[in-house]
Amino acid sequence: MSSFSVTTHKIDPSRRPTALKPDGSIDDNDRVEIGPTDVAFAEWSALGLTPPNLVRMRETRLARIVQQLRQRDYAGVLCFDPLNIRYATDSSNMQLWITHNANRAAFISADGYVVIWDLHNCEHLSAHLPLVNEVRDGGAAFFYFAAGDAEDVIAKKFAGQVDELLRRSGGKNRRLAVDKIEIPGLRALDEIGIEVCNGMQLMEHARAIKGIDEINAMRCSIATCEIAVAKMRERLQPGIAETELWSVLHAENIARGGEWIETRILTSGPRTNPWLAEAGPRRIEPGDLVAFDTDMVGPYGMCADFSRTWYCGDGKPTDEQRRLHAIAYEHVQTNMALLKPGVSFTELTEQGHKLPAEFVHQRYGVMMHGIGLCDEYPAILYPEDFIRGAFDYILEPGMTLCVEAYIGAVGGREGVKLEEQVLVTENGFENLTKCPFDAVLMG
Image (cartoon, rainbow, N blue to C red; front, side):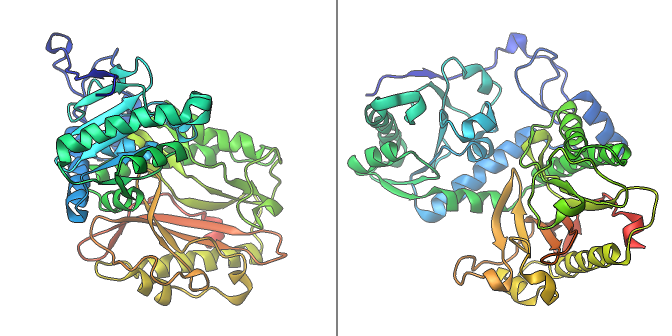
């Protein structure tokens, strides 16, 4: 047996407060668990929103992973992607740092047994999670920064632990789904006869359908984002730098228990065309368009992802600025109207709103994409980018999507970015985004 430290943790009943927060988590000012602040809960209550039941949300997510494992006849899934670890366990540890330093891993067996490998002395970060059966101290870090020239040695020891778990829970089944893994780890699993299968596919399909508590968590995160965006709007005036305006979203998100921003896409004036420039030191001028994409990972780690374009100043937008905005708005609204259960992803591509020819070259990367803890499966592509056989699936109730538009001509001075976050319902769709469009651009 491989040597490692194992913690099978229980919360000490003598230290557990009797009071609970609205999401069912313990109301203890000194708790280790992260989460929304009192400010966020108060704002959600005023908006009539129901926070998620965290116990039920965690159970539902684990059940979906187990369902996917059994459908594919896999003995388990091994996750290194921090968002997959979060989905499977709701355990969080330096999420952004872990994205490029693979110190953590999680194993979930087909019977729901959960093991986390975490950094040294980090067992306390998962102590509030009863669905996590074991926390193992170290052992998953076989990337070069942590392991140096001993990568292969450490990877083999780790593979031995995985082998032990597979034999314990899977018997003779050697089929293991793995989402992402360093090359030494993959080779070590191969050497001991483990059949490595597509773990990212499995996890993306597990994450695609949201339960009621994930939907409630998403509603809350979007509400927090919309409050932050409203404060951005209050700050927008000629002379403010793009980065100054963008910082408002970060600050307001963190103040409410949100977690990070995936990108820094806020641009103004000529920097809005072509799209995907990052917020910079440019001072916004009167008459500029200001376009942004929130990409905000808010409370509960749920992504709030919508886009707006504003007019800056007391003047009137030009006819061209209004035209760009009108086309973007029509594009998003027309494509949202296609959403209902049973529609295939291919049909969305084929039946979607056709961009005017002048905007095709600088089209956005997708017409729509899944959303949850981040941008997720599926990617609904434009006809020009369609990959036959890549996404031969259909819309199902509980899927959440972002419907996109970027309208900017090659050589044009400005562009418009719009995006809505929606839920596929039993009969159609619900637009989860309540943030208003710019009235002067809509007029």
